[in-house]
Length: 288
Image (cartoon, rainbow, N blue to C red):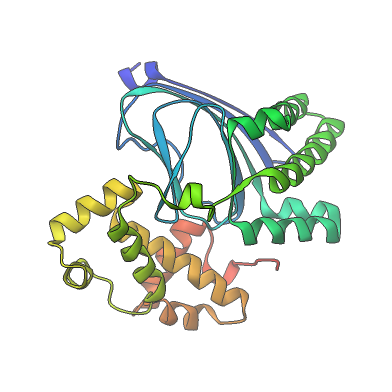
């Protein structure tokens, strides 16, 4: 067994025919620049419960500060990644669930999904978590999943929806002043991320972006990676696939969507889409 395996502890259980999964993970001596979780879930939403670690949360090009005991709920199609700042004992629990799970409650479930999709991220500080017993509700979901029975699945589903409703009611919003004005966030990186989102159909090469923002290509790479946890090319590709999905949801064909988000060759779009979304563009379906 290598040194990495000795430092990593991981377990998970599933419920609702694989539509809901609970993970418990601990990484001793977690290091900066390490890759610990997937950066985007195209068809799944995610709840993080941070137990320990020196990190911040990169969300859509922004830094979100997190502390021990905090919880974050992330909608699907959102670019996010935990960024370790110094070597630490990184402990977290996660619940990942497919967006199709909201269909289980018919119209009410779909309305809850729309609310979460609009909010994009819910941020619950430790005080909110403990004050409104979100930690207990989180544990109840885990317990029900662990029963591995039809009744346990049903209870896990009800507990999940109750958790999400309460989290939405009491969470801090990502645009609150306390979160928007973070002294460690680099304004130029935010401007670059905004420029990318507004110009996905254009040439977004390192050369073009570096010239526009008066940076060398080397410094552009280092700055963007340091502040967001993503390489610039990975960020652009993820944003393009997410935008292509939105266009396809609105009725565009896969070919038209590929062109509108900047892919000159459909074969390249096809490979990137399938790699990131897990299915071919023509197989993609999304409920509104």
